Image (cartoon, rainbow, N blue to C red; front, top):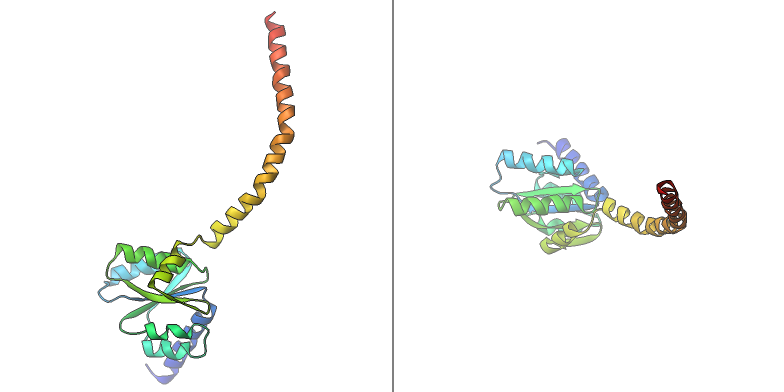
Amino acid sequence: MDRAQKEKVVEELGQIFESSGVVVVAHYAGLTVAEMQDLRARMREAEGSVRVAKNRLAKIALQGKPNESIAELLTGMTVLAYSEDPTAAARVMDKYAKDNQKLEILGGAMGETALDAAGVKAVADMPSREELIASIVGCIGAPASNIAGAIGAPASNIASILSTIEERAEAA
């Protein structure tokens, strides 16, 4: 890899570190090519990505970034998983690490906050942005549906009473 290629990789990694909602760092020693492809596919489904890069270049890319403190995690055979959604990459990596003992989560970063392995687990257990929005909409919509039900209830009660009276009249 020549100098221009290295500079390009450093620039790409810098953009990843700046724009990602979460970055997870893990050791992947012992993973087969098929297992790594499976991890990449799972991450793509969650709208995230996986990147293997030279630790030295990743450390250079981290210089001056808000999550610079994760540079100490970059030792050995490391893989970076990242996503814009603050929980997606952590969730996929946590689940994959449970299924495959060869993947060991070291930590990561969420914005300026450095995470250890337990922190990544905690982020993975958080609800996603879509789940939070759905629960908020449900909370907002519940009173409106209760009001609509209360307003509509007397009319439906009157309708059922009238139909009962009509049935009795026809039977007589």
